[in-house]
Amino acid sequence: MGAFRNPVVPGFFPDPSVCRAGGDYYLACSSFEYVPGVPILHSRDLVHWRQIGNALSEEHLGFGATVPASGGVYAPTLRYHDGLFWLITTNVSGGGNVIVTATDPAGPWSDPVRLPGITGIDPDLAWDDDGNCWCTFAGIAQARIDPKTGEVLETPRRIWSGTPGAQYPEAPHLYRIGEWWYLLIAEGGTERGHGISIARGPRPDGPFAPCPANPILTHRSTDRPIQNTGHGDLIQAHDGSWWLLFLGVRPRGGSPGFHVLGRETFLAPVTWVDGWPVIGEVAPVTEGPILPAAPWPDEDERDDFRAPRLHPRWIQPRAATARLDVREDWLTVPEGGFAGRRQQHLSCRVQTLADAEPGAAGGLMVRLDERHWYGVHIDGDQVIAEARIGPLRQVLGMHRRPDGPVLLTVAIDGAGPDPDSPTDSPDLVRLGLVTDGAFVSLAELDGRYVSTEVAGGFTGRVIGMSAMRGTVHFDWFSYVGA
Image (cartoon, rainbow, N blue to C red; front, side):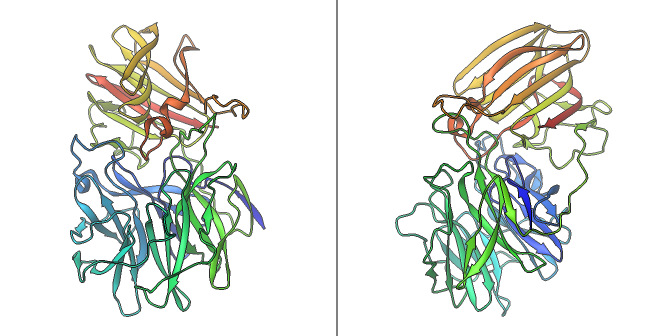
């Protein structure tokens, strides 16, 4: 017996899909408008994960400037079959459904194989004993395909649409378990009504009969601290135990509750009763039989930009414009550019040493999308704190710019809002700079305005370095979570 903390992958890592190769586990998640696309993570115990790469390069994606926030790459499926890693996903902003493969999930990944005959999102891959490859996608529809060429071998047909009346049957995953083929789906939408249901049939194309206990996972209409639970993937561990990885959120503050980190990846144990999976408790601390712990070494809190390329955790909206070859051991961000990492802790402190070229403006930004962000920026002879909330943009504080590069700071405090206040904020965001060894706060902001409930969409907060005007250089970046 043991215990682990949820989420097992905190921050903006939604729509998890997991596979196993021996005693190693690999996870893929959605990435939307950010490049590189589809983060790949590695674990040896299903609890401790580290990012090892991304499956889709900027060249693979070919995003243009018109790709909207929460457009781009939707839910992937990651599978290990015949010694090869297969990943299928949907680029809703051009390219449609694609398959890439790799012998090493850290990369490199192949060029995409396109599937013009598969038009739905959330595609899945499964192989039967005869070597047929079945592609199942949102709706829920299915067809046999040739995964090497992208050819669709038959007209897609509807096979099961989940609970009658439930909206958005999506995120299908098909498994052969014992004598049955099981079809796991999400339904109810990825908000508070989210859930997971399952059906089974004698063949990969059914007919499918629903589980009498559907939905097998949902937290709708409960007061549990983890909400929006759904979009899951089953995995059998190397010790024979079964688990479910799925997305959820941690809403905080007053009504309707605000989640700021995006949809995160959670883990729950699974038992089998009368041929159906039963999902165990989903809680911030979950107790039960777990695999032997295999934690990774702690990651560096500070990136000095001395490596030849950026760590795979760094993401940029639509195009990778930040460069390491302009000023030695500095990251350079051109006008309109942003390079950040996902916020993964409810409380954190982020700092960078920034140097703006004459006439330039830029610095640290807490970003949900182009219309919802908080920032502390060098601008001429001033350091300013400002916010963008929808159509409104406001300067909130100013301080004379110190000589030389400027140490900018974002401090986020998520230390438990008052549960009895219906209007309380989910967290507090402080923006400022360090001068003469002391922190100078320029603004203290209610975090709800950089949350999904205000901005809409499917992403979470990304904190990083931006250039609003001209070119800005960054000597180092540190992120300390609490």
